[in-house]
Length: 123
Ligand SMILES: [Zn+2]
Ligand SMILES: [Zn+2]
Image (tube, rainbow, N blue to C red):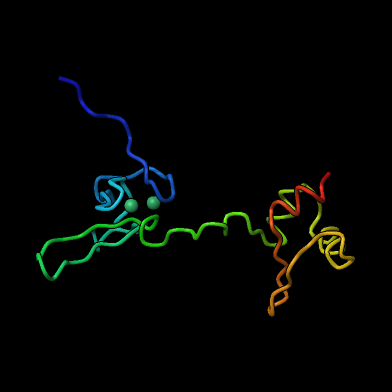
């Protein structure tokens, strides 16, 4: 008889799970953090609620509750874009202002870039 000693990790944040924080998503079947002890600190990477029709607990991880819309993975802000290009943020902001890199500036003054434009700029 073998003991399952392999540590479970959370499918949302990839940190280890503990017996009081492990839960299983009913959508994707992956494990995630759900603090089941109100007297202990813990994090929640998903939710649990009661299905009123079946009076059963339903579990869902944040990956399933808040999926990243397709395409948004490739939109980067100034810090992310500068890290991606390995250049300083002021340099990249300057290049954007000069029109050297296609970008969008939001109403809050945040620069947004599309990854393929950064690839083209780097070449
Ligand atoms: Zn987690
Ligand atoms: Zn899930």
